[in-house]
Image 1 (tube, helix red, strand yellow):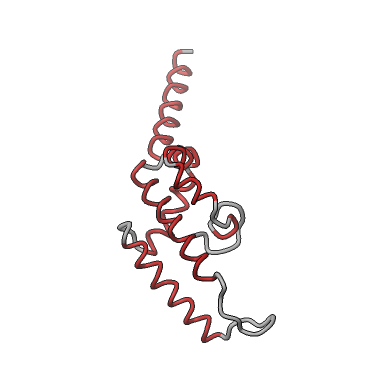
Image 2 (cartoon, one colour; image 1 turned 60 degrees about the vertical axis):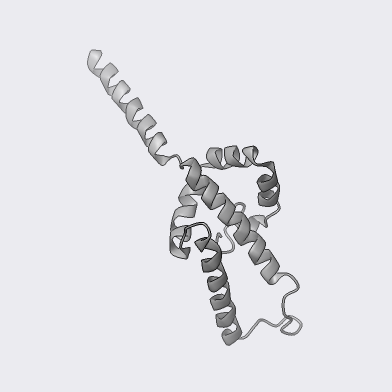
Length: 135
């Protein structure tokens, strides 16, 4: 009976330790939430009233490459303000935003940011669907 008790205690310790290690640091949450808000607003403005390629026509491959390069340049500059690289943001943001409680807590502490965050398009920001690039 004593052995089982120790196994249970050790198991709970491992679970609690994993929870503490997995939880995003408040500074990281702040950095990534602020970056996501700015990225979302930048992308919304980028495509607002976009160039017309003809009714129902898609941009050419060359135009798509130019747009992609332009967006990457703008994202890189924006993320530099938050001491992040584009690759680092893409790699770490799923981990940081997986901690819903930390994100919600941060947004609750900053109502102005919460309003901006909630105004972002859900399907493009990795918060409501699988479409988009998950910025």
